[in-house]
Image (cartoon, rainbow, N blue to C red; front, side):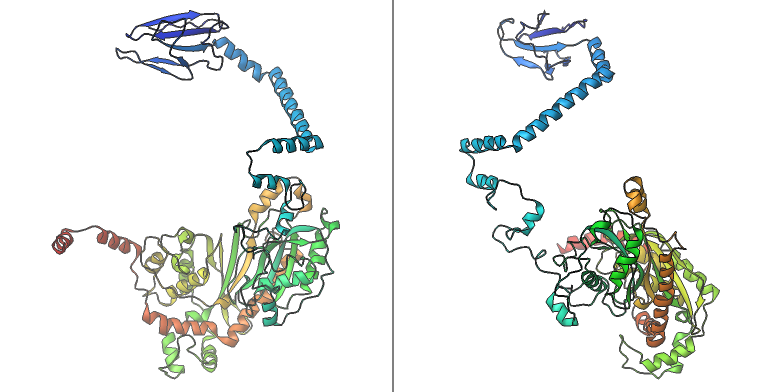
Length: 620
């Protein structure tokens, strides 16, 4: 049996367990003379099992084998018990004003000692102490001493990150003795800073960049462009791209340093979305660091960015690229990661839904057996078909079916069949679509009816929107083969193991409409310092502003007009409808089972039957 008392004073209890399952207890109040007293081990627990042999489990206890106060062959365990009254007094003391003052005084003392220690270490006396310590330390390796002495210059001074990068021995991720990092020494092969690109496209650079302003700040560029003459937006090897043209204009305008020209990562280049070859945009947002001038770094001069900086860049851009707005942003802003939503628009001519298209082609064109699949129609044949198709208007039933097909994309779905090289189980194929709508048809000046469609989502895969449009159009044109419940659900199902081959709509009807940064505006407005200097990136809710008027004018008179004129000259949608009717549907015909039937087949194949087991046993 073990007895312990809780009194108003702190007591020390010494417990001895004999070897023949008998216990003796020694108590003493003289904590100073007790050799087993340890103040740190307070309120320890003592447990004795219910067996005949007494077992002892202790936590934070002092355990010795022999002692003067105990008989031989005994184990001595000591603990200290504190009263409940002392615990409550200490807690109330710490929570009171006096306890807070004690904490503040202790923290002030620690701060003063830290500051004195820092001054001591940075002074000459501290350096002498360290030198003497290094001389005494004979076990330290030579390499460690050399690093402390700083072999670059012989001074005992810590180099900054910028000085380290400028040193020729600096390299990133390479072992000692390797080559210097090409990422910081050789310009991008798709930039005009590369001599090969300048020779290929006959571009000349100014000898000296005397227009430098100084004072770097993060800004957002609101860009509109026509992608017909360019191989996409992103910088690419031996290709003329939108990014390379914008970078060249920034360098010629003196907004980029010569050491940063050709290195997009040095000036923190980022884009809201990449467009494919031939795709247009009227609201592409790019973020980067520009030299805006030291006198404008800490001012809220919005018109300086929208007039001076914008006009300075537009002077050196081609006619099919324009800067619509320049807005200063926070330093951690990224056009890609800070974007909340992005909206694309795709224009569809109504004659793509012309019924009995096969009969019309056989009636108007001559039969040819050697028509290539990539370019089956001659320019004269395209113009002949366009005269017959131009006056067609979509029916209300077709428009309703198109809207219901586009509405199936709403929500989070798997789009592994709508891009390249993705498996059904790939998590990166999941995309969230807020809405996909088809607006009312619009008749243009040449008499052709167009259907504008708008898709709003978080992010899109390569060729995703064009394949979404193609599948929805096939549901309208080939309703007996391509259906919403069967074909579209199978294409969007993650459980369908079969890789579907989907058609792709022409790139000429797609353009980037608008980028939304609502989450960035909310985070920015939480801080009081950035409210006055930095403006919100909210172009949608400012329809009467000058920027939105320019955006609307560029969208209607430049981008949409370019799509209409290009279709009148080339007839890309007529060629696409011909390929779908005579090439794609004859080979594939969307003979994919619905996801429910596909999952049943997987389960049936994976569950072994008795006949299969007997066959495998006989083969073995």
